[in-house]
Amino acid sequence: MAGFNRYVAQLDSELAGIAGHPTFRGTPLRDELIQVVQQQKNLLENVAGSFIKNRLANAIDMVSHFDAQSEIIRFETSKAETERIESGVDVEAHLARQKHYRPRIPAEDWEYWNFQGEYWIDEIGYYQFTLKTGCVQREEE
Image 1: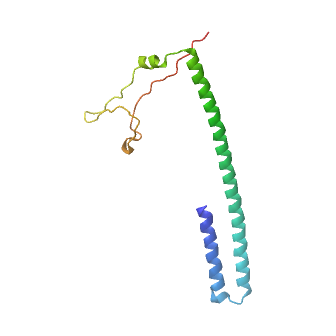
Image 2: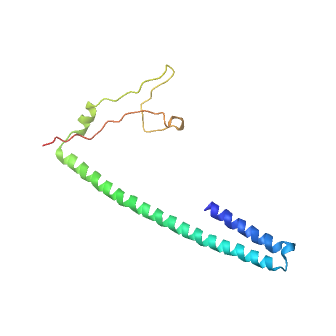
Image 3: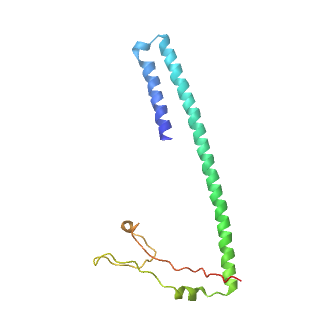
């Protein structure tokens, strides 16, 4: 969008320069140059409008797709939670049996802090932690 706006502004500047230049006053060249620049500006505005319309249509399609996917994910999650509750599996006991991995400390001046749901800007990309899985493997029949 910024590129289109700069281009239109430049064409407006060209039009003002041509119309105000004393050399072109009263000549057929002035009228022809103004017509050519005006045609270019009209063409650019049409192209920019089509471009913006297509980008907005693509954005609407993408949001609609993600919205539909979120509905499916919510349904599948609810279904899995219902099955887990109905199966009687003790998830807390399953989680308690799992061990946490503690990453290697690279030097004595490094300290390991357990993750408590927060991120610090200087730690992004460096913080390592492991998760326990609450998913219990189903026994195959």
